[in-house]
Amino acid sequence: MKQIEGGITAAKGFKAASVAAAIKYQNRKDMAMIYSTAPCKAAGTFTTNVVKAAPVLWDKKLVETAPFVQVVVVNSGIANACTGKQGFDACKATAKAVKEALDVSVDACLVASTGVIGMQLPVEKLANGVKAMASQLDDSTEAGTAAAKAIMTTDTIHKEIAVSFTAGGKTVTLGGMSKGSGMIHPNMCTMLGFLTTDIAIEKSLLQEALSRVVQDTFNMITVDGDTSTNDTLLIMANGLAENEPITTKGEDYQNFLDALFYVCEFLAKKMAGDGEGATKLFEAKVVNARSKEDARTLSRAIVASNLSKAAIYGCDANFGRFLCAMGYSGAEFDQNDVELFFESSEGRLQVFDKGTPIVFDEELAAKILGASEVTIYVDMNEGDAQATAWGCDLTYDYVKINADYRS
Image (cartoon, rainbow, N blue to C red; front, side, top):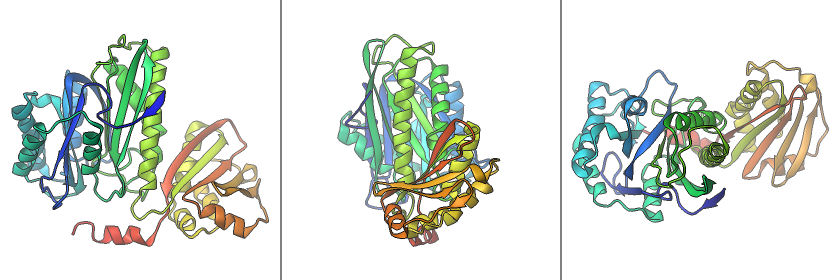
């Protein structure tokens, strides 16, 4: 497997387009389209929030029941959540506009929205946007990048990646893009993510692979503890790589799984590091825990703690905040087994050793915590399970951004 240039248009048969439809924003692109020249197998994972946006309900149904999909239409600015029947009608109107513009059946069109909750989408603008994008579809890297930028809300950077690997003697490509900066918390985090691949694979295995990978990638990031109404991760596979279709969990399936994990982890970390107002990527790695679930629980608790996040922002070597978060996480452990370290490009420093604080160099600790990517490394010394979670620091700007988000 190797990382290559591009994103959602890297795989064979995939095209993208974007347009300024004035859904909410002015003078910037706010709609994107992903199109496959061939029908695709589809899989998806969605928010665990009981309050689910209309596009989540629309996509869940299609992923489960549609024989194939071919198009995804995304808008930013308005989430189409808590919008009742009118919101669901907007999804249907978008799909109908796609049918008219591209001759793709209504039940082969997935939709996604991100932005303010409780506002109705301007259906006429959506339809006009679809029509404009249908005439601009292109398989260039630039078209994919423009689409990745169009779905941004409070994101400060666009997020895209592509990799290639081998399956059945054929070169297979997997690309992706995502957005997410605030309202991000595990079990799906607040995000939209779209993956495209030319691999030939059985639909049930595609879904199984995505559901498995999401547990240790997108479900391990948090920015602010809020699980969104709109979280959606979709993958489309059109089979144009012409590999022997994957129907069992052999070597080809493992190669695909590895590539999928790499892409999802890359995008997840980009989202965590781009949290609203963030200045640092904050990582917690827990090793030698009693179980995988304990390791996940402990690492997520560390990066989710507001006090931990504030300490990372202030370069404050207050290791008690990380231990405290672990203690209320719900995982059982003996603090007298725990070792805790600070790590970054500036060095590594142990600060806690099996129940006892260590006298350490405060200046070195502040230097390590001052790096753009900081890791809290915790050795539980109680088993052989491990997990890593990602978040960001908590800054003054987070409050500023969310205090006037609707305006």
